[in-house]
Image (tube, rainbow, N blue to C red; front, side, top):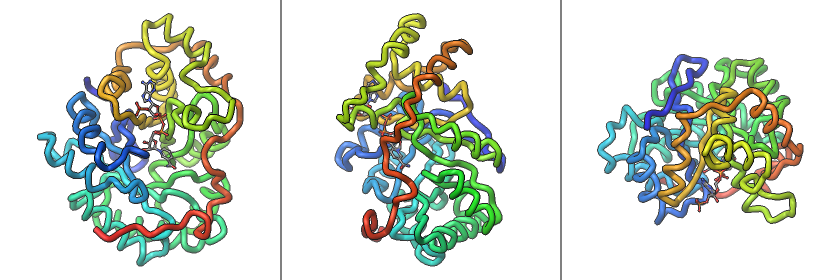
Length: 294
Ligand code: NDP
């Protein structure tokens, strides 16, 4: 399976479909990432806060796939924000991953109530980029106002904004803000995994009748239809699974096309209800935690 690529605003090529490992326990991460690389994924999305960077690095090293062919993305946790702390956070992540350079390093969240620390952290990413330690830098869970504040005080426009986007929560304003600034949107929970974890009665994207009907037309699964929806709208998507059959299913999305009417029908499923944490409410007090040394 060959995954198409997206060009970031600094010319770096990002595989359009990547592999997520949030909530993948360390003891299952090596096998999951190994399987993903075996079936054709060339982009892994991890984070310091996931506690599995070491296992991601081990799987890549043992895979036989040349390091240069695997796009490694990780995230700095809020507890490591501030210029010097974030430079050190890079060393921790690179050490655990066992790599000299990280392909894409992003800030995991904005810290709206301590935005000066967010700016310090981003300036450290700019330094790492200038020094060639990272190939691209970006952010995650930044809303329009967070992007505006960041862009006012820093130089490098983020290459990526990784945010919650699935058929039940589309965030059109964030998609528009990203597009206005030339920032590539990367969809987390792209197939709506978060709608399945949270038994809040609002339903799972996997069971949606509209998505199911479209899947039937194409002889594909609901997950494959949702991933196609992202890809055809220019978004990067990073589905997670620990099951080999689903890992393979989720990358098998390059042999069919949704029609404009089908894309619009999926857009219309947006409920406007966020399932993840409210980005404006992220604080060190509530979400801070120590990220161990490498
Ligand atoms: P996903 O939309 O990727 O869904 C994953 C869930 O769906 C898992 O429960 C998985 O279970 C199940 N699943 C996977 N494939 C299929 C399939 N084909 N059919 C049915 N069920 C399936 O959600 P995630 O929340 O895991 O997000 C994906 C990635 O996004 C994360 O791994 C992480 O990299 C990133 N992320 C980033 C966040 C951020 O704040 N920046 C927040 C959340 C996620 P199983 O493993 O058993 O197959």
